[in-house]
Image (cartoon, rainbow, N blue to C red; front, side, top):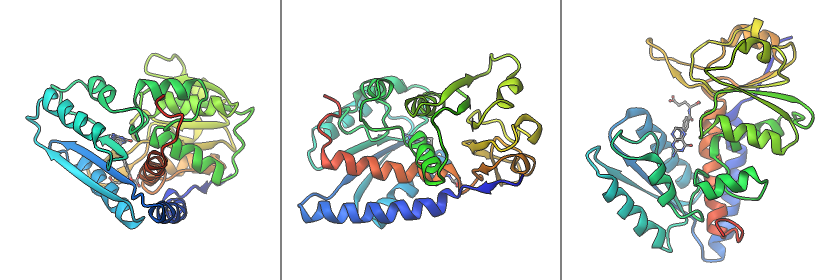
Length: 286
Ligand SMILES: Nc1nc2c(c(=O)[nH]1)N[C@@H](CN(C=O)c1ccc(C(=O)N[C@@H](CCC(=O)O)C(=O)O)cc1)CN2
């Protein structure tokens, strides 16, 4: 079997053109969705993702602003700024780009963002809603993965989904979303024994460990759907996923490439969450 590529760049373009229409409708009601992104420090990858968010906002007609802070910023200063944004009625969505410098406690920052403006879906109230199947802001990468699976007509119900990785941003929430859609979900992590026994049983395999080229064709069941969330920068400057693409693509029925797979969908779903925030989804955060 040779896999079909699930192209997140092309799908993003389609979803973003629908989003542009939603923005237009909101503008006709006098609302311009506004996203504020805070970035701390000089990490080149983070800077590039933030620029991508700004560009995507402007292309869909949303407004945005970027607050760039030095890596010496204290946690107290950051929390004070977030407090101001929580109170600012012109700001619908707030996102603090991760990772943060070591001296800032990530959880304190996440919990300081109003759940009604938490377009990352990381606040414990929104995580709790996701776990209990209530509508809320979904974390952008997992939301993008489910959107891709739906767009490519992948049946989730009744399938065995295996998630490699248990991060709060990707692994845990994507498993929860698959469970909410009635998959049987197995999480594998650094302490799992005989990971291959699980990957070989997966109908849907989510790779989110950040270990470049670590999953090869022999680890994958024939016909599996493989979603590669890894973005690994190689020494020669290229990007690689967690899958060894050629050998896994030989076995899988569908696979996301890296780049142009899951990555672009992350920013697209952020736009979608910002629209939801601007519309004021009543249930969120209450
Ligand atoms: N507050 C948040 N921080 C981070 C998140 C997040 O969802 N919220 N996710 C990642 C980074 N990220 C968005 O912030 C992101 C990662 C990758 C891409 C992307 O489009 N990747 C491209 C490749 C780009 C490249 O060349 O580097 C692709 O895969 O095609 C977009 C957004 C961590 N931080």
